[in-house]
Image 1 (cartoon, helix red, strand yellow):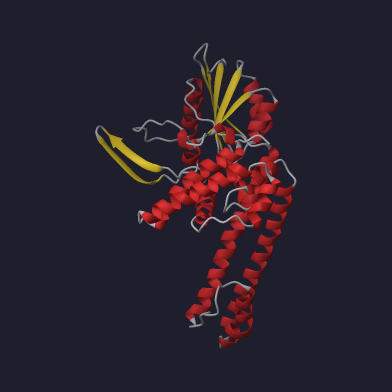
Image 2 (image 1 turned 45 degrees about the horizontal axis):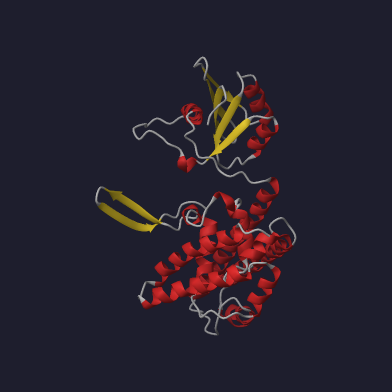
Length: 361
């Protein structure tokens, strides 16, 4: 419940900040344009009639302003932009109007605040997202090289690509088939990019493995690893992307990662469509990939036993693995399309991950 005297809305950009404040006692509106300096913003806010509460939208400027205001004893809320209520007929958008709108919604308690990560959690999230970017860069670099060869009729038939055997084929057999000097230079450039990007990915993998083995996320990563398809990299990424798992339930975690069906119902009609794909896209991709591992027959191997030995969640992990495989069997028997079935399994996998995440160590 809003209890402060003054509500402040900030429309924060890289080079400027539009600020608006509403005094609840007098109804007076204060407006100004500030620099993005945290000290300048804090100084203007402290001159307002107190106590003061502040709200600004989550965005690329991060959470530094939140931490600065919180350290000064000022209540600050970082608002989820997708949850902001805006008039449907409003066709004029300015920074000043956005700041006033935020101040009014804050006073009415009509905002949805995001979960603020700690500095260490945000640093770990940056590392995970750097690895995700590197994965995409490597995929694109490999595609450029393979499609260069394809345009010249050079195709690899020796098995799975991007293995040691495939790498030898690229250097020994594919390269000599390129006749012009310009094409060979192009091949060398693309091949070097693949090697450099792969080396960068391996360095990031090693850093994540090291952090996952000895950090505040270690117990959570080990518990998540009790499920099939969730290794150290996936478990660590889910841990840092979701953050505070206790703000969800087994039913709501699927909605957060956008794995619930969209719906448009009115009156007696009810129509459901594809999944919403809202929320954290990285976590959604990881869950969808992990769900495919539950399709084969469930057999407890050495890898899974070793994971169970490191986490006190053997029974819960075994129950989840059996349940998720049974779901796959039911979908297969019903001749459900595999991609649709996998998303449904991924949605339930998110619930099992939540149940493991909130367990006591």
